[in-house]
Image (cartoon, rainbow, N blue to C red; front, side):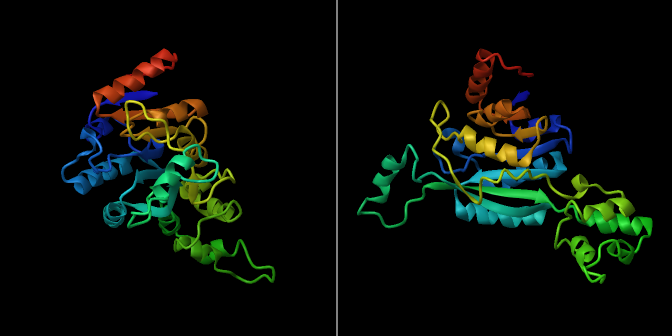
Amino acid sequence: MLLLNGDCLEMLDKIQDKSVQLICIDPPYNIHKAEWDIVENYNEWLMKVICMLETKLKDNGSFCMFHNDMEVIAELMVEIKKQTRFKFRQMIVWNKRFEGSKKKGFLDGYVMRTQSHNWEKMCEYLLFYTFDNTYKIKQKRLELNISALQISNEIKSKNGNLTGWYSNIELGKNMPTLETIKPITKYLGLSFDDIVPKFRNQKTHHSIWNYDIAKRSEHITPKPIELYKNLILHLTDEGDVVLDPTFGSGNSGRACIELGRKYIGIEKDEKFFENFQSSLKAEKKVVTI
């Protein structure tokens, strides 16, 4: 585990490029809930962070970002598409009011108010991005002077006819499967992990996630450890590196410790940094500063 106290735009220089499997950022939302939640030129700042984070991610890695302001999300998504190679995969909704929630009775009170003029927002959003690595296939094929037809011939229909399986992969319409990667590896030497972002389906979730609100501490907006664990289990293997450049409460790091992942955490606020560091030392966790 590596913890760094400072501005993430400066601290990220200490991290090796293409060394991280999962980046999970819970940035300030700039909705003025606390002093640390006020950021000038917010979108410009966050895009600088995102562009720097892009360089730290492995080709088969994942980038996940929390937010709760849909207008800001829309603006950021346009800029992410313009300024990075990230490919949007899914928007996950963290639903906080659900049957069985410990907080449902409390949250029901907001829903029942007769003077409301809008539907109460009881969720946050998680943007899920990966890279599109299918460009490597055509690039490698042309480099080796191998025809697309030669590779396509390796897998035919039940009637022995040619299909579009290979052209669809090369065009980025489909990703290789464990079966279709075999001819690609045979002719081009590219492996499944060279092309396909890591995703270990736990067969438990879809795009709506029900998690209780995390208990507040010094940090007023912590994310639930169980939510982080779900992300980590789906997008990493044991021993992979997870990076959180604005760790706040440190719950992303706690989830990594429980699941045997390596963790790099950055936090600018000295109080939050010291709280997390002290709690780890009290629990006798190994921390490198």
